[in-house]
Length: 164
Image (cartoon, rainbow, N blue to C red; front, top):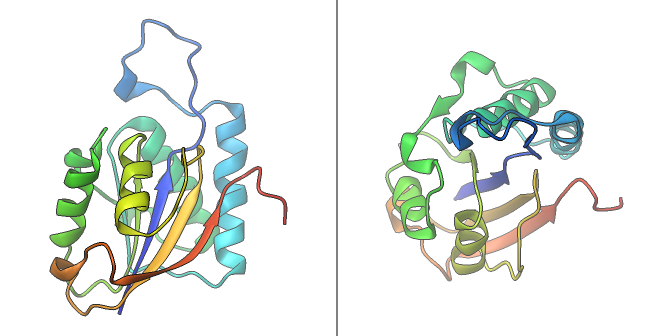
């Protein structure tokens, strides 16, 4: 079995209109939401083997803040350039090429690709994965190459404004 957590980056800042999209940092809400979601993951006992993120500043910052809360070493976070504004097909390809030594992976990225991916592959039904939202699914496979729609069980969907 493989478990995949899809995490949309936390809320980012639009304060500097001349700044490149790639370099946009988290805003104050994003800086609060990421640790909050990390705490929720820790309370669920989630301990991923790999954190893989888009290298965009806001996605990497989200991964770092969550990693601190769940006890994942920040220096072990891996980036993949293909995840920056990846579409669903690219996300699927990225997951299918994960090393099988990883059983539990947390992937950080961007919309609309993440929403499309969770709807198509993880059996979610949502219009929009909110910022810092997390979708988790367990796949009944032993090889990431076998991941596809129809061989998973949706575990949970959570996001900062979700009331406990």
